[in-house]
Length: 286
Ligand SMILES: C[S@@+](CC[C@H](N)C(=O)[O-])C[C@H]1O[C@@H](n2cnc3c(N)ncnc32)[C@H](O)[C@@H]1O
Image (tube, rainbow, N blue to C red; front, top):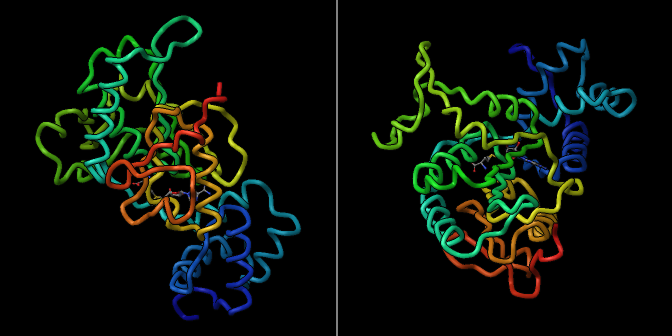
């Protein structure tokens, strides 16, 4: 092709689809053909490969972990922003105020414990919004054992998230009160303040794999992730999240996602906000 892109046959597209589905659960629609060509062509050129078939052959026969990670990273969609779907953060603050007022869970040292998970955190705007909202609204959380786990399958977005540095235009449209929660870098960037950054643990984690922890989490955000999965995959993933959600915890999903269509374990308690049904709680979790 004269624009430097390599031609993608129907058979090659099928092989790429099958591979990203098997690894990441991502179902690529026909509409993603152009995206596949533009994102993977760069990798093929770097590897000196002439066709998508030879790329998939290479991944199957001798691709390293880094090669496979690069393949998955190239095919994820990472769109996100600070305070996206604002009503979830308002609900979260009210919920956590309730947790603080009631008898909280305690850690082994007898300190009140709060755990929140951003599953599919992309470049970090979602977990940082959680941290900024809660530390601003509930100052006594400073004395809590409070941690936010932020995970994504895409290692490149996890690295960006962990840096906590963003171009200033990421804050456009936010109120002056919200903008004031960020620090300004001398280079014109905006930065996450150290007390909020210190709440975070960032990790690469594939939601298709068994979870390496038991929770329980007081809240799980898994928003705009399931839209890339087919219904059976969505159901399996949400059931897995249910196993690590606290019995009184909340699960927040994306505006176009519908949990009830794919899982029986949850009840709808607000706009795209769910709790476990009484008999499907994660009470065995440590
Ligand atoms: C559109 S972003 C959503 C970001 C954020 N949750 C939000 O709503 O703004 C979807 C994220 O899901 C991640 N993702 C896709 N498949 C995944 C999987 N199998 N395991 C973990 N993360 C996955 C992608 O890498 C991407 O960063």
